[in-house]
Image 1 (spheres, helix red, strand yellow):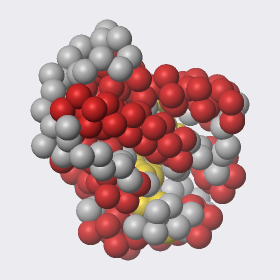
Image 2 (cartoon, helix red, strand yellow):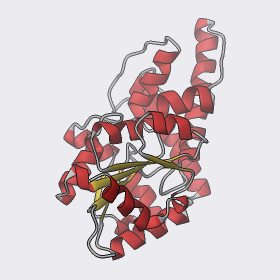
Image 3 (cartoon, one colour):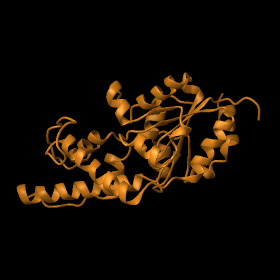
Image 4 (cartoon, helix red, strand yellow):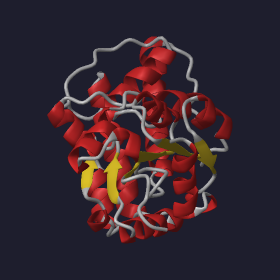
Length: 255
């Protein structure tokens, strides 16, 4: 195949490499349903359950944890203090609720373990054999522990996650900061990089950052939403893409 027209691929974690998106969604639902039931008791607000399609996907999916809390609550016209990351789990702040969700997430993760998307890991290994640099960029503060528990950490030359974002003051998705930072760490031009995402906020970040190619993985039968929000190519699974030749074809056609 010779020298490739792209130099790096930056993968999102949840829903792209590991099957933790469902774990996150389950943890969010438990935390928010408990909170909304408490509000019904305290304030007489009719309980309306947190749903995957109407709430998780548009307001929470792909966003940094505390921003996800804030975004969902605003959709329900609930205004509480943003708080501080040190807030105790369950405290009536966005950070407190986010910390509660993280405890629930880790409990589920500990009990059930981490499954991976084999097709994504296979592509990563093929890319590395061709000398393509690989990064992971995720809003999750659990990124490192998830990669370690799934024994995948060694595949990535850079990791920009929720912890790194907090340390560097990076904006969360839909801003492209985590992806541009990953490219900067690899010393790769944005136009020579590929972004692989499964969340609407993630492909929006890919489009905003003017990367060479943004691939959307439609795990939720949301091909239309991903395409409309910035994905150049949308597939249900990375195995459908056609591997390195398909990525190379895109770059040759769009030079």
